[in-house]
Length: 284
Image (cartoon, rainbow, N blue to C red):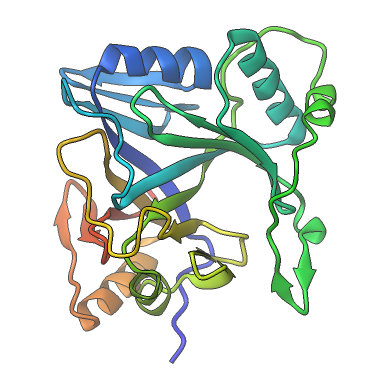
């Protein structure tokens, strides 16, 4: 029997361990353009328009994010438009922010970076859905060169940088997992995301409501890779259901699958098969 997560499900915040909180705040505020929202001893929240998108937890001396482990591949900040992405790219050039890559995926245009601890970041804009590439009814995301000049040219002439624009959200998460089939069983068969595309037996992309992907997961860290240990790492990421009924339905399926969640601080907590932390919450 096919199960389906609520179509208005979206991604929420992500929590990361960093080795030097002051250094990370400088990077995320000055380079990425997130705004500081709250700071406590050893922790800071950043976001846009008062919405937390990133939680940083300091662990002094933590090693850089490790290859060959499960965990975060990248988190992806979605800006509202191509001109917004153009302003971001122009800022990266002005601030000499190192880029790790850039791609046109057919469904989106994306910039890739790494923070000082090696956590992967994507900043992207979506194309309108009628422009997404399909073949025989199946979505076909691609890896084409990015038209960087066209993106910058789409931006306005105002050179002032004011940070990420209002309306920026957590568009999707991309995870490293140990086994693709186990991940698909959890995210598709239990939680109810729809499988949108497989990539060469190495990665899968799933979504709610027909989006190109809310979650990607890959085995590029190695099949059977272990979880990260005492290093910079993802603690958890958040899946936001639109209401309490939609959340209750997901919790019911988890219990039926023998993977019950536990509640703490108004979130329901569970680990996926690769021991990536997942926080389930109803939109408030």
